Amino acid sequence: MSFRILPADPDWPRQFKTVKSALVAVVPQDAVIHHIGSTSVANLVAKNVIDIQITVGSLDDLNKKEMEGVGFVHRAVERDHCPPGMTLPMAELAKQYFKTSDPISANIHVRERGRFNQRYPLLCRDYLRAHPLAAAAYGEIKLGLAAHFSQDADAYYQIKDPVFDLIMVAAEDWARATRWQIPAGD
Image (cartoon, rainbow, N blue to C red; front, side, top):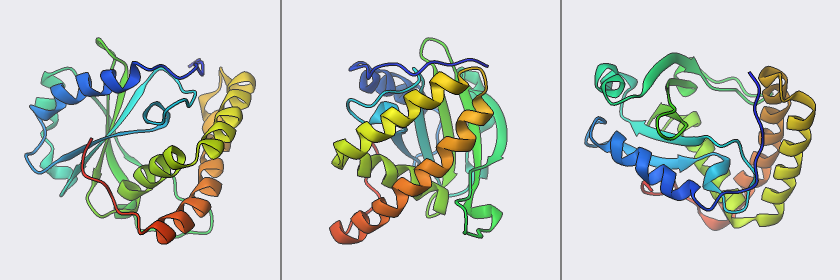
């Protein structure tokens, strides 16, 4: 699988809203939808794929057939990356994963409310939004990795995931200092 890292696109927030409007019709009423990942951070380079997190009470609350009926292809029940040095139960990292590419390319990550993996991408996103220099440095790392590993996504993520873990050390300090909390949906 090859991929490219592109300059920030001011249309990404609109694309998120378009995909979100399709999701709202098929997710549980108490689900919360967030724009996550690099496309959710202003001026950050990214793959042209909108990452969306749906937070649910239980992974079983989501109706896969309804999701697939509106164009979201179920890819897997997955486990998110566990940062080095941490030991977390599977439940803290479990997620459902969907993709769509028509008309907008999007990855849909369904995670349970209150889990480690539900909080992680939101804190990272908000930290990078509040710290443009950290976001710019992270963007440079992504560009360098893509230049070396554009044909090898596994190698790209093998290095990128620990970089996120380094960012999260600072993000956790920032969260404590600012009393950051998981925000309402986007």
